[in-house]
Length: 365
Image (cartoon, rainbow, N blue to C red; front, side, top):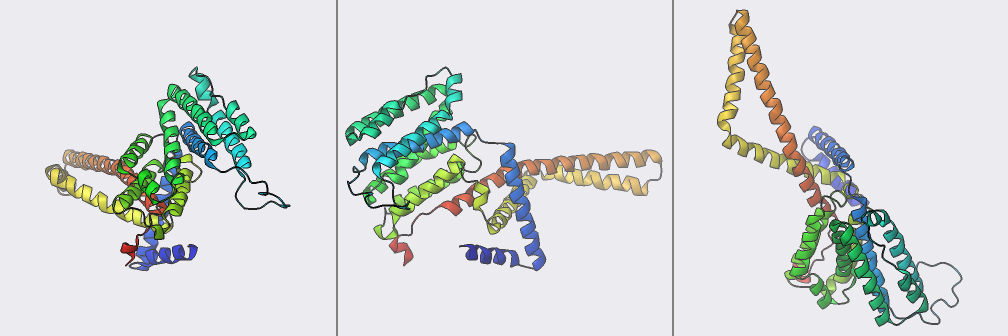
């Protein structure tokens, strides 16, 4: 992958003349810096990202009840640490511990709202006793409702982020076959999740919510277009997709770090094109005002150059300054309009970088 990126970047940089390639790379570098600075100036609400992680972990903990009990020989003869899957009991201990640790990060806002902290003691004890799956699911569901109620009373954005984490985890991890995968990506579910993501743009990490929404909608469109193809490894791809979505929304991965130089070059080109289109549209609407400014500058210069008396010179200078003032204001307006264009194109670029929608057999032919 690194070799491909390097080749693509070189191709992007060498397009046109060498000077143009260097200019494109310089613009991309400036854009990368600008995006990073804007993200730092408008930091996300850390509590929202924590609530999202809490919801994701709650979904994982609930599914632990569906795992078969540990076999008597699961770890027999093992004398060293391995990279294999965790046993059911150990996964349960870790899952409940993670849930408790993440919930504690929200202790302050919950306490400030005068809400009682949800209790996880029964869940932890039940896991250690190895109870039956049905009872585990009931306990986990009780904890889920207690957490959701506490967060909703504290801040509805936190409860929405929690629900998003839980539902998105179920979307990526719960399906066991093509039919379940299609159900998880049904239009009504994708619409609800996309709505939650849209409502959390301002509190989740920069360029995460919109990017994930675009990526999710592409998965939804793929499922609606013909359903999962077993040969495409859809379940594995969706599982990996969930890890990418989780990393972005939890703030573990910075969106700008997912983009290569070639991506910033492409973003800059699209923003420039859209800016030119916008300016052309404004000129068509306000052409009379633009021509008035041009006439003002021309007339003022004539007064300065051709007319010899001081009063006319002063008048000409005032006219030029006024016209320049209007021009500066125009540049400021353009800069303000470019900012959301940059944000939108970065979101699209990040979505393209992370989306793992499989290609169906009929599309490969």
